[in-house]
Length: 121
Image (tube, rainbow, N blue to C red; front, side, top):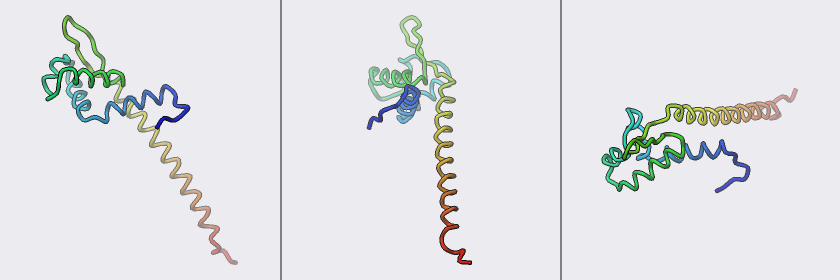
């Protein structure tokens, strides 16, 4: 479902969580955290075609989780350390919004509890 009024920041968060939603991409990210790897070396670790690995890397790159750098004939993939911080910030913002909603609902329920007719003085 597409919602009108989504800004670029929301789209960036969508790309980030879309990339992280796939177990293979999360594994690729973990491997690249340990040090930069060539796409060829990444491809050797998975039972899929080289083209499929390239597509996964492209999704990670579009989400800003990795960067690619061409060195000679190889494309080296490395993680962006700030990407995890962006994911954490997005989750923190969602948590804050939901906690505020729960607090408002708790307040409304408390007000309603005082109006249940028990003060028939």
